Image 1 (tube, rainbow, N blue to C red):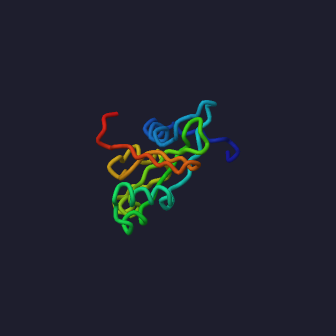
Image 2 (image 1 turned 60 degrees about the vertical axis):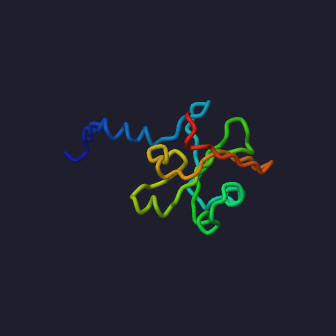
Image 3 (image 1 turned 90 degrees about the vertical axis):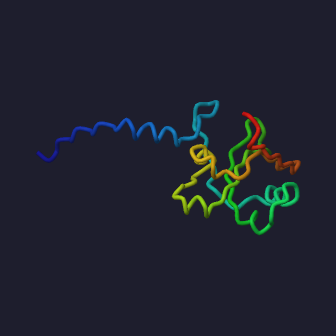
Amino acid sequence: MFWKKKAPKAADPAASTTEAAKAPPATANGKSEKLPKPRDIEQRIGGQLVLQKKQRPDTVWRLKSVHRPYPGNRDRFYFRVFDGVETVNKGVKVINYYSLDEHPEFIIWEGWCDKETNIVEFKDKNAPT
C-alpha cells in the first residue's frame, strides 16, 4: 500500500559524532553561536603583521582570516589567519573559526583584536597552553 509510512532509517552513530565535532560550542544560553565565514584579512591585522611581525606585504594581503566573538566584549574578537589557497589545495574546507581546530597546521597566526582601540595581540604558537 502506498500510503504507509516507511520505517525511519537507523541513524549512523559515526555520522552523528562527526557532525557534533563540526558544530561550534554552545554559548552561555545554550544556543550555538553563528560564526562568520572566511574573508580577506582585516586591515588592522594585516597592518600589524607587516609592521610588527615584519611579514612581506604581498604575502600578507593574500591571506584569509576567520573570527569569533570575544566573550563579554563586543569590540573584541579572536582571529585565525590562514592561507586560503593552501587549504583548498590540500582539500580542507574552512567554514568558520572552529574548522581550523581539526587542522592547526594551517593556522599561520592567531590572536585577538580590539576594534575600538586598534590593539592586535598575536598568540605565540610555541608557548605552552
